[in-house]
Figure 1 (cartoon, rainbow, N blue to C red):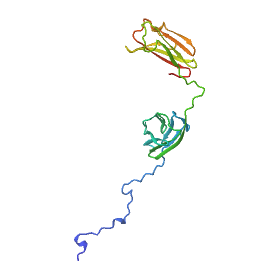
Figure 2 (figure 1 turned 120 degrees about the vertical axis):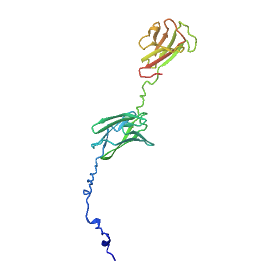
Figure 3 (figure 1 turned 45 degrees about the vertical axis):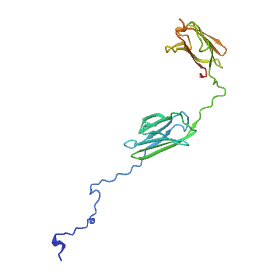
Figure 4 (figure 1 turned 45 degrees about the horizontal axis):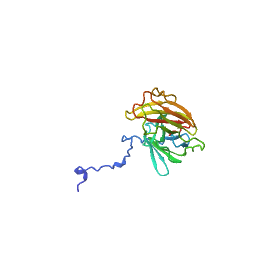
Length: 252
C-alpha cells in the first residue's frame, strides 16, 4: 500500500495550533461605549395659561450634535406631535434658538392648550445615547369676567331718515351712539357709496373730515347724536357706517 507522501499528498498541520490575535489580523480595538446621552431641561413654571408657551432646552456634550428630536403633547384622549427635528408640527407655533451645546424650544398651541392638565414628552438622541424628559403641566383657566365689569357694547340707533328710504341730495343723516356708561374710547364714522365703491371718512373720533365740516354732534343721555351733511351734497346713495368702542373695550 502506497504511503500518502509517495504520491505527493502532504498531511497539513492543524490550523488551530497557533493562536492568532486580532492585532495580527489588522483589526483595531473596539471603541468603548459612550454612555452620555443629551439632556432635556424644562424651563419656567409647570403652571401656565392656556395661551402661554412651554420652554425646554436640549443640550449635548458629545461631538456630532443632536441626531434626533421628537416632542409630543399628551392629553387625556389623544397625543399630538409638537415638533420633529427643528421644525414645529401643524397646529403649533414657536421658535428654536441655538444655545450652548444645543437648542431652546419655545412653543405654544395655536388654539390654546385645551385641557386643565397635560404631559410634554421630549425624546432626543446623539452618539452618546438616548435622552428623554417629561413634565406634567397644569393649565390655568382664563379668569372669569368681573361680575361688576362693563360687558355691554355700545348701541347705534335712531337713524333718520330710516335706512332704505329716500335721502335728499342735500339732506342730513342723523343717528345716536349710546353706551350704558356713556364713556367711549373712540367713535369713528364713515360713508360708503356702493355705486362707486368709494368710502369717505366722516369723523375720526376727534373732528369731522373736510367733506363733512357742516356736520355736528351733540351730547345726549348716555352718548352722542350725530347729524351728518355732506358739503356739495350726496354724490350717490350712501351707506353710513359707525364704529364705536366704549371705555371698557366693548364694540358692537
